[in-house]
Image 1 (cartoon, rainbow, N blue to C red):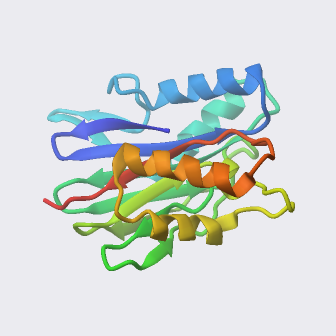
Image 2 (image 1 turned 90 degrees about the vertical axis):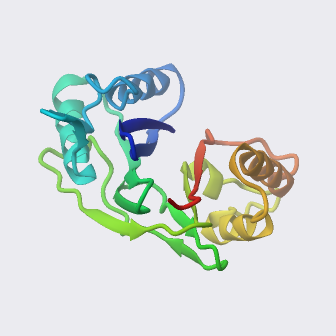
Length: 212
């Protein structure tokens, strides 16, 4: 997971998850992160203009990453991604979901929404098409991106946490924010799985939108 600056009022946030485990997956993850670097000159989600940088549409960024992954990386891996370009002044967010778990928005009134229609992972097929969508954040809303290691967390009875369990965690821990919420999330996962080992990597990113 990570973030990058687009301009004075706009940021990008992302969550990626490479297939498989071990050193090769970790190396690919590191390389992918460099494509979404905080250095704007190296970040392929940004386009340089006369006035600085602007963000590509997230679907275009996904397609570009798909082309790079298939043409430059000799690997059987693929990866999933959620990427959002967020205007921190207006709360408008342009997003893409490429096979990644559905981002969640918890509204200030307590309503929780699953975002996106799924999409396909990046690096599976040439010329894959991706679709962006818009969401509107308001003061007090929370946006969560996460890897499937969270929803596929398994308890001693062999049950997965799934999205319903994650929604419950969001509701129970609605009063904490930022790093404190992520700490609570980790404790909730540990309590859920009990003595069972965590089978997959876990990553998550939370954005608490405070309004203009």
